[in-house]
Amino acid sequence: MSEKSDPIPADHKKAEKTVYICNFSEDVWPFIEAMSSSKHSRALEIDWNADLSDRDLFTNTEESDLVFINPRPIQDSFIKYYKELFGIRKLEILVPKKHSGETCRDVYEDEELFEKLIELANHVKKLTLLSYSTSEQFLILVNKLRQRGIAVYTPESPEEEDAWTVNFFGSKSGIRQLAQQSEVEEPDFLMAEGLICVNIIDAAKIAAKKYIKEDGVVLKTNKGHSGVGVLILREGELPTDYKACEQAILNILKQDAYWDKFPIVIESLINVSYGIGGGFPNVEFKISKNGKIDFLYYCGLRVDKDGGFQGIEINEDVMNDRLMARIIDMGFFVGEQYVANGYRGYYDVDLVAAKNGDLYVSESNTRRTGGTHVYKTAVKLIGKDFLNDAYVLSNNSWALPKGVIPSFEELIKALESVLFDKKTKEGIVIASANLLRQGLLAYIVFGKNKKRALEIEAKAHQIIANLS
Image (cartoon, rainbow, N blue to C red; front, side):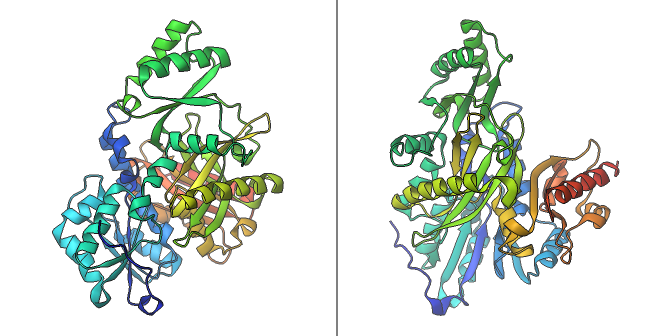
C-alpha cells in the first residue's frame, strides 16, 4: 500500500492546487456495466451522466482557483456564464482524450493529462484532489499520483482501508443492515418492512406474496441511480392470482441483468403523505477529515411517480420545526456510525413520510448528491441564511417541449427576463449546457417565497415552450 498523505500544512495552502474530478458514472459503475435493456441501456446512462457533468461546476463555487476535470468538453459560453454569476476568475477545464464513463481511469490512462496533474503539483508536490464520488478508480488515481512522489490530500474521501464504507453504506442493503443494528439505540431510524434477497426467482416469489397481501410492493437493486433500479408496483398493476403475479414480476426482472447480479431489497409500499416535505424529506451532511459532522441543509425531494429523482425544494417551511429537528437528529446519528467506521465526505439520508405519521429511511448516498450543487449555489448567491431568506427549487432533468432544443446562447437570451438577478436575489439559474442536446434542462430557481419561486419556474417553462 502506498504511503498516506498528511493533512496539508498551513504554509502550503496558497501553493497547493485543488483538482476536482466529475466522475458520476463511477459511483455506480458495476450497476451500469450490468445494464442490458433498451430502456435502460449502458450507453445512454453513461451519455446522460457525461452531459450532466458540467452541472458539478456548481458544487465548487467556493473554490477560487480550480482545475475541473470533466468527461466531456464544456461550452465556452457556459463557462463565461458560470464565472460571471459567481465572480470566479481562475478556472481551468481539462478533458481526457478518451471517454469511457470511468473518468478517473480515463485520466490516468491519458499520459498527457496525467503528466499535467504532476505539473500542477508544482514545486510543493502537493495536490488537493476532490471528486463527486470516492470510487475504486479514484483511489487508483490517487495511488498512481502518490507513486510519482505527489502528496495527495483527499479531504472528502475515506482512507483506502476505510473505502469499503462508500459502497456499503451507500447501498440499499448496507443502510438496511445499519438500521437493524441501530433499532434500540435510535428508535427514529425506521425502514419500511422488508428483506434482502439474492436472486430474481426468489425475489419474484417474495414480492408476489407481498403485493397480493398488501396491494403493492417495492423492489430495489442494491445500488441504482436516479430512480433506475427501483420498481414500484401499485394496486391494479399486476394480477391478483399468485402464480400469474409471480410470473409478471419475474418477466420484469429478467429485462435487466442487474436484478440478478446484485442483492435485491423487497419492501412494503408506503402510503405517502405528500404534505410533509413533499412526501420525501431529505437531509445532507459533510464529515470532515477529522471526523467532525456538519449539517448542511434539509429539503424535500421532487420525485416522479416511478421513484425517479427530479430535484429538490429547500426552505425553512418545507417541514415543521418538530419534524426538522427529528430528521436532523437522525441524520447526525447515521453520521456518527459512518465516522466510527472511517467514512469521510458528503452523505445524505433520503426518507419517506407515511400517512401513519412515521418517517422511513429510504436510502443514504455516500457522495456529493443531486442537491449539493443547489446548496452550494444558494450559499454563494443568497448567503448562509438562505433557508430563511429564499425559497429554492431545482430540477435536474426537466424535459424540453418536443422539437425544442435551443443552444445555450439561445436559451439565455430567451430567459433574460427571469434569469437570476443579484439585486433582487430572485430568478432562474441554468445549471447545465451540455444536457440541452438531450432535450433536458437542469436549473435552480430562487424566489422570495414558494409562490414566487413557482411563478418564476412556470414563466421559464412557458418562455421555453414558446420557442417552438
